[in-house]
Length: 246
Ligand SMILES: [Fe+2]
Ligand SMILES: [Fe+2]
Image (spheres, helix red, strand yellow):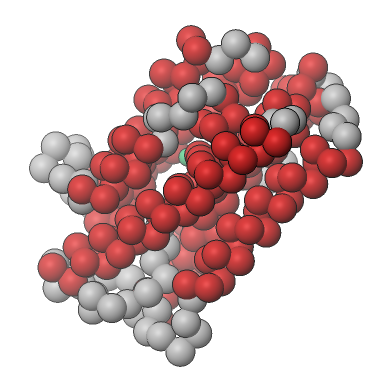
């Protein structure tokens, strides 16, 4: 699925679409490479993997509940940034993202409703998820710190996890994620544009790297907490690795 035309226009022809210098355009790639190296260092190919075990309906409901919670929070915290985003070209792109994240929440809730779950009221996030998603993502001193945490580190992890788990999802859920994944890729692209344009000094780059590293660590803690929760629910072994979470 391609980007809607208005989005292509925003990214390629808007003010923020101006070409960055080669130095600026490689910094994002360096950060992606840095995250991928850190992730590779956590992977043991011999270890039992989430992807090796059947995805039960019980776990699917747990996973969708987590995704719905994450999408709702993303809609809320990005929406909360708009009034304090002085870079108007970045603000317009982030406003598009707010709508997307709200839609993603809705798609996850519809998938849950088909499974008899109509609200998250009785669902409680793990403390690590609250620290990562409710505390860390919304923080950030300025636009580049916010985007480094969420659009770069967070959405990279989410896209990779969604693509990896997609073949094992039931048809209705896979169709929902076939709509979500291109949006998340758009969010990475708009993050790249924002970082290219506004992350320009050594201090900016150091602040972005610090946000990337801390986000990665919180994501890893969040994945361990997911496993612990699945073990508590009798769904998985506590030492399983490689979970399909952002
Ligand atoms: Fe999303
Ligand atoms: Fe997103």
